Image 1 (tube, rainbow, N blue to C red):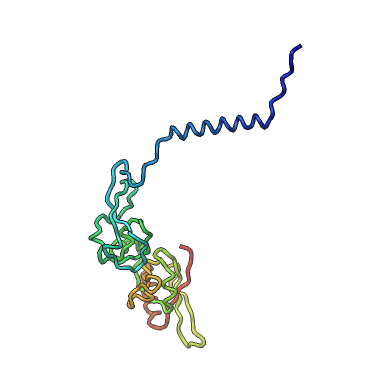
Image 2 (spheres, one colour):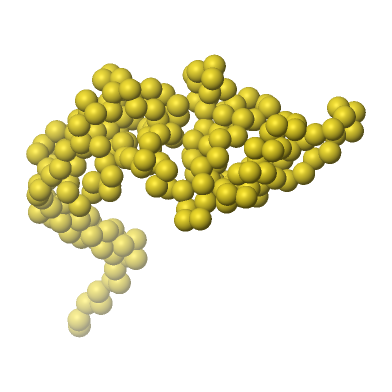
Amino acid sequence: MPRLRRPRSPVRLLRQVAAAGLACLALLLALRPPAPAAGAPIAGPTVPVVVAAADLAAGQVLTADDVRPEQLPADRAPDGVSTDPAELAGRVLAAPLRAGEPITDVRLVGPGLWAAVPDGQVAAPVRLADLAVATLLRAGDRVDVLAAAGEVAAPSVEVVASRALVLTAPAPDGQAGAGDAGLLVLAVPPDTAAALAAAAAAGSLTVTLGRP
């Protein structure tokens, strides 16, 4: 008389399937090529770049200790990147940088930054009455500029510029020079730049922040 086979336990079957899966995973990991070690040469063509040696604030004057040379894969180097640390000495940052971030022309006060001004607009300096507000801003922000004039008890307030692009902003935590306190450079249409200058002469200016 044939003996009846007891059905397999579902728990035992599940354990066998899991063990087989783990064995396959271990085999795949063993066949995987090793990751390149830290400091290992980069495969493929590279280009020299200059990166920030530490976190740097907007408005900071660069020194040799603030930057360092590195090599990046040619396809990862951004356009307009600096390649010679010596050429950056004395240049002023238009925006903050993180340590290791490549330094490009649009991060520096100069022609590269002015190239970021949209067609048909100009770069207009604007000094805010509240210096603390100015240090909250960064290059790339969009702001509305408000002008206050008239009697202190009942000033009149009007919007002089809408969604103006911030090109430069003062450094936070008092790192800006005395002449830079509260000073922004905005990209605006020429007629708006004239209105900003007139409003600054007649009263005080402040900003409200919008989405970039």
